[in-house]
Amino acid sequence: MSQVWNFSAGPAALPREVLERAQRELLDWDGSGMSVMEQSHRGKRFIAMAARTEAELRELAAIPDDYAVLFLQGGATQHFAQIPMNLAGEGAGADYIVNGHWGAKAASEAAPYVKVNVAADSKADDYRRLPPREQWKLDPRAAYVHYTPNETIHGVQYHDVPDVGEVPLVADMSSDILSAPLDVRRFGLIYAGAQKNIGPSGLVLMIVRRDLLARATRPMAKIFRYAEHAANDSMLNTPNTWGWYLAGLTIQWLQAQGGLAAMAARNRTKAERLYAAIDGSGGYYRNPVDPAARSRMNVPFTLHDSALDAPFLAEAEAAGLIALKGHKALGGMRASLYNAVPPEAVDALVAFMRDFATRHG
Ligand SMILES: *Cc1c(COP(=O)(O)O)cnc(C)c1O
Image (cartoon, rainbow, N blue to C red):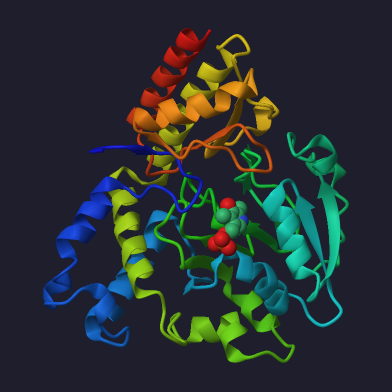
């Protein structure tokens, strides 16, 4: 198979240009005669690349100087636990907004380290709607408010940043980071596993207001302490050098595409095309999410008859449309439309869906 369109939820598609450049540079990176993976993270070349990547990310996402940028490991999941260790003092509470699978997991993983207050939960609506901001039961003394702007499995997304006053807002942006312009000042901490919108798995990007780093007062090993990572330029121990490098190429690619405003416009158009095809199918395909809360990154949909799921997936794959099977929690299909999924991929999917509906009646 020569060219496929990859709709995987994660690890997900990377920009083709990024992969081609990595391929060209694989055996001789930056004139070193070796790959980037084979050299010291303390070496001149790597340090220069790391610093350049941070600077280019700061420019791309307009990250102010009073925020640290960290390149960490452990996946978003490890930081579900590490964030309360760092941001909440002994005995403190934190508010969690649960609008899907990942928010629920973030709350349960935080529970050993902070008194978790689930301030809003849309489980009763099967996570098809977002809990309205006016119904959130926030505690003004909370150490922070945690939410998940885009829920990858349920396909719901906040299109505006909620106002939580003075309490630091913590966002798990694993599946929507860098998909649109970011108003960093609205957040205390942003974190994301890289494998959806930034690069390969095994890298976590974190943007954290520097004053919050001083909050980690409980006893813990240095490796868990974000302040130590910040003080050591994310090289407290050996970082994911390959992931850092690929993230750097992706950031350059995003800038070359016109930056985050251009990505937002492109992502909106892609999502609108797919939702229009679903909504215009006369019930053949359905997306259950409240239209105001529909994700531009992850589009779950079902066929009118689940007996057609298997043929749909098999024929899609034969047509080069890969990884459309929905998450097992929801069944059906899911198309993930991250930054690296080009508009042509969505056009091919929409054409396939129309054709499938015609042929299978
Ligand atoms: C994929 C995902 C995670 C899990 O990330 P890991 O890197 O596997 O720990 C967490 N949150 C969201 C929103 C995700 O999409």
